[in-house]
Image (cartoon, rainbow over all chains, first blue to last red; front, side):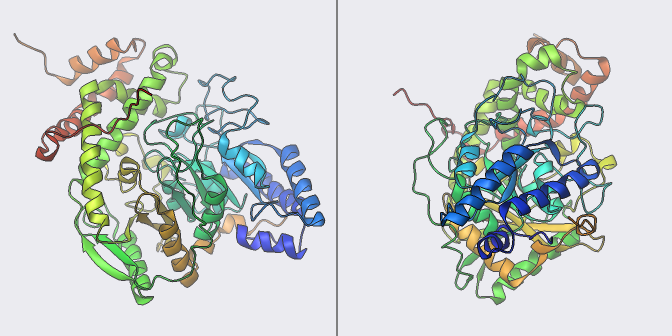
Length: 468
Length: 63
């Protein structure tokens, strides 16, 4: 069978009787198992559980019961999120095997309630930080567009699985760009929603005040469908906020007429590390939106570089508090790149951490002033396309500009989506950044862009060649 | 009083204080090389005049 590319198409196919969820789910699992030895996306397959969920979806369809657009849809989750039917490893040997055993994270419960068939647990950079370490007994994630290149991280497995069509959607996490980076390098969509919108209960923490569990899928539309299912207040997560959840899909009206798009005149488009093709791809995309009726506004964001640093200090400090006992006793049990980054947290002082949080308060006001002039911002997601893995090292995180962690610092929603392919055949990406709690506008602009373009439907040749 | 200000002394003291005492010289050296960049990033945040009287973005509720 020809597997559908999007959740939207699959949901329609299920309802038209083109295929059953059992056929669909089995097809995606077959494809995932065939490509996983090459791509390194899955740590664990949950075949029985997924097929049971598929059978339940088919029974619902036959009985006229519809639990929504995720009913019978094959999905997978980053292996840092607890699932009752499979272990959680955080892609490492340090996490207590008993952690998360026997229960579902809130987001997983919500996906199951929506009828999703969860096919497995996905590879990540250990504990959602650092880089893959080939000396550890976990699959090595490979970019499906070029196996020598990085799939980014930390939600590398989810990025690979979505791009290669091993699932129709998945969950990543994001503390400094871990959802949007893989979306960028692998060539699909991924949204970091407003901090507090989605429960983190049942997820191993990295940076308590920055983390989020996020939708990753081929299109903005599909991200909206997933976010709809997982959003909402959860008293089990102290960071969860009790605010109304809008109808995200209903907000996708295909129009950007009159939408004010802010383009920062500093940092995001003028750092020397920004690749010219990536920059051109973003600006060309802005022109497409302008031609569709959007209003372009130049804005100034002061202290953007310092915001990246503040995010890093907060992230590694919070992470070091969680990991310090294990770093002391099991330093070499961590992947070598994981420990190198986590332990940076002990090199900062308590005052440094508080100062970063004071900067955060100030920067939030700066950005609020900027956002009073516009509806969304558009900036690149990454400075470059996917680099060769052999050329990467954890030091790059220190010295390179980042366009993603800034939005973790502010807690604002940011959607990464493809802007096209580079001359070398690698995906390029931009972010649409919105006001706090206004994911609906972010998704609306992203969906409108994707109705005018087809970059998000590009499939890596290695995945297109597989028949199931 | 005279203080040692080199990165190696600082890093070794901080790692020791954090009870990370099993690292090899090669592992410690990675942190020593990164430390000036890390320190500079933190120090820059103390030079921003606008946050001189800002409250930190940490939340605590007694109830």
